[in-house]
Amino acid sequence: MPELARNEFWKELKPIAQVFKADALPEVYIGNAATEDERYYVPFTETVSSRPLWISPSQNKWCDILMAKGAGLVNRHYHPHEVFAYTISGKWGYLEHSWTATAGDFIYESPGEGHTLVAYEHKDPMRVFFIVTGPLIWLDENGASAGHFDVHDYIAMCRAHYVKVGLGADKIDALFR
Image 1: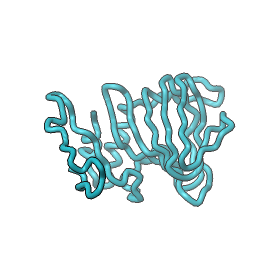
Image 2: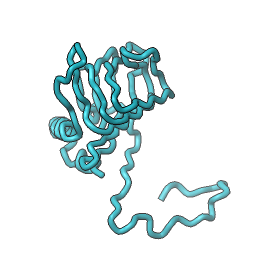
Image 3: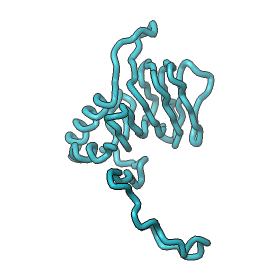
């Protein structure tokens, strides 16, 4: 139960008795999702890490916070499905676009977009909340396919890191919905 209301107009409102349908899974609640504890950030590249928040193996989808503490790079890739991003802090963009995102900026990436993610030097680390659907198709310098990275690769990467830093693979499995 959340904290008790004191003066809010809804303070006498009673919660729903049966919150979940019979086959529903509980919500995922992560306090302080953009934590400073770097154990929760899985190295994605040499300069960028990912904090997994929610994973759907059956939908090939995940939510994460991408972080770079300085200049960073996620190499060229293509998204066959939509991606949503909300900038928490720092400064980042795509080499292929005219905008640069800072705290509070929202980005919708249309299916079929290829780009190169870069993080800029900034007083605050780049932290971006992403909702990623489907694989990332890695691209070579000519824009041709050079491999892929999907939810199953993401899960394996996250499990291995969480075991290595002592958090345990079960922390990743608990994010499955």
